[in-house]
Length: 334
Ligand code: PMV
Image (tube, rainbow, N blue to C red; front, side, top):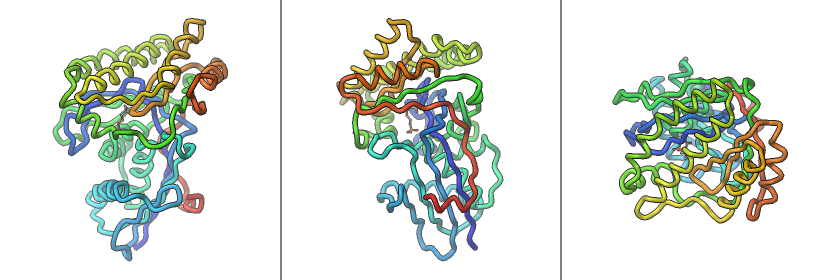
């Protein structure tokens, strides 16, 4: 037996952040989150189940994956095999469409693409919500990359997590947003999100207040999106990111993802805003600054960020589609 499929997913950037789990083993979030799926940055993945293999073989960007990544992928494939009643191991080839060494390689697009390619290769027919719930097991943020444009993730209430998945709020072409990504360092992040979330939940005195604040931010973001009100969405976006980081910085010992260029880029965003450009910043588990604006302002924002001390480069990304199936012979490009 040899079954194969390929898929592509865009990464997503949370405007209302996910930071904390209600169940670590099932990767269930403690609160909801809301994000924008991007067109230009993503992952293409090909999966082929093959009875002749005695272990999963995982290749990333043309080279064999490290042990940790390979184990994480194999664990995810075990979920697909269990659902499909399949025992065959798989060849997985994956390529990130992000500049290498940008420190932006995202598990969101990786597990969304893997979820679709692996389920199809295994012969499973799943709904988008089921795919989102499955992708969540690989990485919480991956649940959101199943859909394009603006997307909301539900934390769910069930212990088994079948209601913890994402749904689309606004298609990618409905609002001319741009995300200008200021790269402020190269290399991998200091501490991974899973470990940092767990540490924050256990030691930050602000954690309970952070989780309690998320629902109001989600409601405000939803209203802003319905009204296409960038200012209102931007205020929530910046507030959510700063609260998430403040909560992590208050952990013991502190989790600090920022570097001097992070603060310089934040200041550039604030200066642009003081000068009348509606632009708002967000930061994830790393030092890069992502600035949300409309397409008409993206040149001005890109130039100002590129001229900021310590900023290495600036990528501009548009809203993009959800995960899509590719012809299985797309493998040649991987
Ligand atoms: O999906 P994970 O486990 O890599 O966590 C994502 C965490 C943040 O990027 C900081 C926030 C988010 O909602 O994407």
